[in-house]
Amino acid sequence: MAKPPPAPHRAHRAPPGLCALPAISYNSHRGLVLGLTFVAYALYHASRKPPSIVKRALSEAWPPFHDPALLGETDVAFLAFYSLGMFVAGHLGDRLDLRLFLAVGMIGSGTAVALFGVGYFLSLHSLAFYLAAQVIAGLLQSTGWPSVVAIVGNWFRGRRRGLIMGIWNAHTSIGNISGSLIAAAVLRYGWGWSFIVPGLLIAFGGVLVFFFLAPYPEDLGFSPTTLPKAVSEASTDEEDSSSSASAAGGAGKEERRDAVGMWKAFAIPGVITFALCLFFAKLVAYTFLYWLPFYLSQTAIGGKEMSVTSAGYLSALFDVGGIIGGILAGFISDHLNARATTAAIFMYLAIPSLYAFHAYGSTSEVANIGLMMISGLFVNGPYALITTAVSADLGTHKSLKGDSRALATVTSIIDATGSLGAALGPFITGFISKRGWDSVFTMLIFCALAAGVLLSRIVKSEIVHIIQNRRNHTLDMHNRTADSGAQPLLEGDT
Image: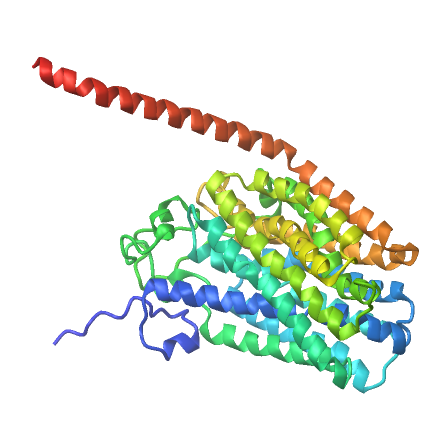
């Protein structure tokens, strides 16, 4: 009796945890990939929130952080090396096993984050120790973003990528919110716990990634010849993707992809423009990420000052607005087929939102919450769009001619450039906040304007394309109407 053919999802590169589970469908695997990468990057962001939550506690009672500028230096140490590491991480991500790369990065990141908290229990007051911990954490955390975007881009391709990745990108805000809540909740036991608990959580997430995450459909035996004809919108667009498996690959044959070089990735149209835009957009977003709780704790809202813990909880609402902004930006950009136009509109709308939050947010708690969420919507919307859908689009750009993959490399270039801005914003804030918060918000408004202006050339091209498409659509509808009206006459004449 002949043996039945092996299940299509079983391949020699399948994660060990999946090998122990019953066979599941392609779409079920896609759901698992979305879920795991969502949790993974939420944990990355959760582990970045403790510095913002403990800033006031450190500045009040833990030498050498009595000077806020030194707190800014630890932020810039993390973000600068995160940015530098990103250029290397993306290049490696297109060449190494993404599952192992991501898992090791998460476990290492957790160790480095916890190391900062160990300083509390050992009563360490050396600035060099905390700077070193942040440098190590920054380098290891750079493994995350290029990896998860590349993995999701491998499993989801097509016209609805902006909406799908906009929803998926809520992990950034969910991570920020959960990180704020966790760090604030354990702060009462000593600020060291605010680092150790998130560190342990991201390390555990790395274990889950190692056992259950498959970076490519081909790792589980799926190929264009084994996929259902209509599993989803992504499957219908598979033939247009530069990473499609060869038809002759079959389920049991491992496919190799040629990784694109760094200079070739830079040459992809739009990469440099979006990277520079993200420099300013991320500067604004990360200044809020690292300094918003501190700002709230120093601002009398409705005539009352709040505790560090309350400020940490309240600051989470900025990211609630960010979740809505990321989904809305993805939906609008899909509908208009205009990523740059959507991002630019959001950045321009962020300008009055930031002004109103600073000028009127202190009048009452209700006004503060509403204006904070609106600011989060317009600040995080384009940041989310560029780092997800735009990066994935450019990483599978038609100029690559289907002979290479650049998802992780392009993602790393764009996000690394953005992270330079993310490092600069909190660092400058540590100095200019001494003169008052008016200077900080003036800087943020200028950066939001610069982000929008940088996209002007691409926006112009997209608008021309939209107008041309609508003209063609109107002409096509007119021709169809004329044809349908003429048809009965032709039939009556015969």
